[in-house]
Amino acid sequence: MISVVILGAGNVATHLFKGFKKTNTVSVVQWYNRNLSAIQPYKNLVDITDDLTALKDADVYVLAVSDDAISDLSSKLPFTDKLVVHTSGSIGVYDLDSKNHRGVLYPLQTFSKDTVLDFANVPICYETIHKKSYPILKTLAHGLGGPTKRINSDQRRVLHLAAVFVNNFTNQLYRIGHEITESEGAEFDLLKPLILETAKKVQDISPFRSQTGPAKRNDKKTIKKQLKALENPQHKAIYELLTNAIKKTHGR
Picture 1: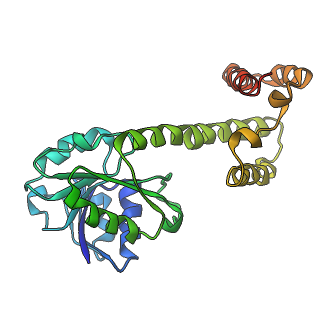
Picture 2: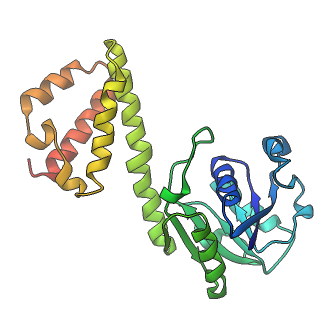
Picture 3: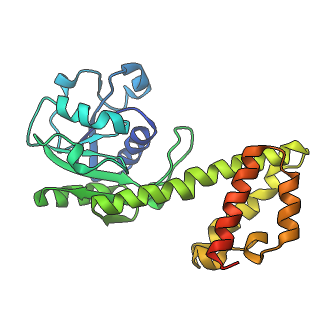
């Protein structure tokens, strides 16, 4: 059984706590956050603290905090020669204080506190500087029940960058689509099967091959008509940018 202390109380920390609690290989012995009220609802499930000097002994300390807080928090930890990992996709492993063994446990997924998440479908990417830390970090990653992958910092950095495109930017496009449908009282829900089918297709074929639409066909009349229908200048700019990108990709 691997003992873990979680530090942080955001979306990732909350889901990791719930995920670890379901495993037979990981025991969360303590949960730290500088604002105790954020983790107060879990006080009957785990020991909670807002005092770094009161941190319990554990095999792994998981820093599930904002990117900007990782370096500072790791330097304030009151111990040495322990395995300390962060969960960020964009922060390097060397940003952790060198007084401890350093690593990364990066769950490649979007996290919202109010949603139910099955870690069986969440790839866990892990990395560490010290070779002796790999077995325990690998076991910790496997304990969540999903696919795992040992990667380096450069691979993690580009995965996180790509994730911004396929998740954050895509979600913004959903929001724009929702706004457009609402402008004429159409139901956004009617687009949901299309959203699911689009995501389903790239499970089997490449995004290049699955591309459809007026830009791919270079349907100039439709493109012109739709640009004219867009009243929001920002929406129009995004439409033009993505249309030109698709046309260039497909040689139109």
